[in-house]
Amino acid sequence: MSSIPGSAHMNFSVGGLVLVGGAMGYLKKGSKVSLLAGLTFGGLLVGSGIMIAGESQYHGHALATSTSGIMALAMGHRFLSTKKFMPAGLVATLGAACCAYNLKKAIEWAPSKGD
Image (cartoon, rainbow, N blue to C red):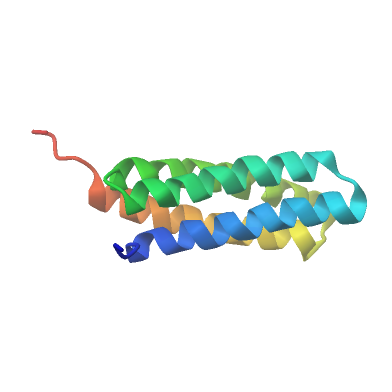
């Protein structure tokens, strides 16, 4: 069994939290939007982790950068509107951290101009 590279762990972790959070939003408040957003963004982050664990490190980090960046912007806007840290502020913070980390890794794995 091959080991999962360390750079994929953040995407698996944040993706799993977003999936669970979307499900909890649906179960507690009946929010279909939370469920759909959780499945979409969480699924994309888990998918990016799978790509990173495979042979697509650059593309996996690029996907995670854009996914977490959109998530951070959307939930940051919601946090500024509602002033409630849970869940919007927490998700915005996680998204921003995930975006910054994956951007750094995408730059590291970027193909050289000769490739």
